[in-house]
Length: 453
Ligand SMILES: [Ca+2]
Ligand SMILES: [Ca+2]
Image 1 (cartoon, rainbow, N blue to C red):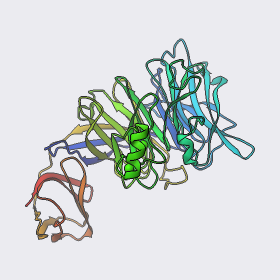
Image 2 (spheres, rainbow, N blue to C red; image 1 turned 45 degrees about the horizontal axis):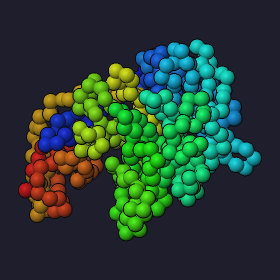
Image 3 (cartoon, rainbow, N blue to C red; image 1 turned 90 degrees about the vertical axis):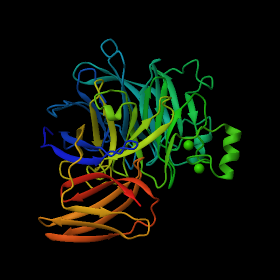
Image 4 (cartoon, rainbow, N blue to C red; image 1 turned 90 degrees about the horizontal axis):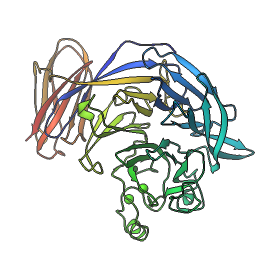
């Protein structure tokens, strides 16, 4: 638990528009030995506040990894995707040391979800009060992120609890974004009087963040169409009739009728998007005014750069691809430090030694390493060629990304012996133009802007 491992250095291609600078991403292990950490928050005490899905709430020191358990919830029901999920801390914690959490529990054969508030006494959490209970739950699709807005209301993302039609049922708390006052009462300006429903038509949203009055949420799609949405009062987000954009005839009809809000980003094939944070800091200038989105299935950090309206995604970059496994949550400290939690013990991952873990990421822009004894050419007639000399046996791989960061081509040549090699490159499917090439030789990576002729 107190581990502070050696630095792991990973170089990831960072493709800003029309440039090909490498961003060096360093990964520092903060804590190991966790079990499905679900929420990671930066606390007002300078510690990380963490939920683990089986029912544990801890403070973890961001430098030493020291873990202090402050609550173990006895009535949490953890099965499949359910358990202890999201958490939020009162923004004026010194005067109102309230900790809000969401968890599932079991009433006979029913799985239900509740939102509760604890009081922190400086050592443990006590005085649990239920703010909202009997939200439909299930072993899948339980949401559930919590976020306190600047207006001191609490947003809650709920899943459809495996009954898709609930997302369109205004009487059901499932498949919604809900809004509560911090004492559990219903805000007078909610769109449906007396109802916690703030927006509807959600399948299973597990990411929620706010900046400059704009609320962003990530949402799991079915076999297609994972989404990032901007959440607005009283609006319909389409599920289950609409998946992703309003781009089929049936969807367009429903979208017109219901004024469905389309996502600002969508992914097919799916990536399983989870924790989401708005990155406003200049500590990592390359990421300023981007959304940081961690993913489970795709096992990577996705950085979505926003335009000046902050309502449109202009570029997408991928980091940590496969390096840590499934990623459940991302946390940004007030001064711009970035922490990420793995989710390899959630029943769907492959735990690695020390999992689950929380790591801190740092980023620097590097000089592009010089390419020595390497030549390559890329041609749309399919006659591309990579030639290189290996001073020792090493695994060789090559990747091309377009200038928006999209993956265009991959080649894995396996482990190659010492000596000269020539590899044919089939590139006839690529359009002519500039690409960012990343060549991997063992642990070394080389980046260069290249042209496909
Ligand atoms: Ca949608
Ligand atoms: Ca669609």
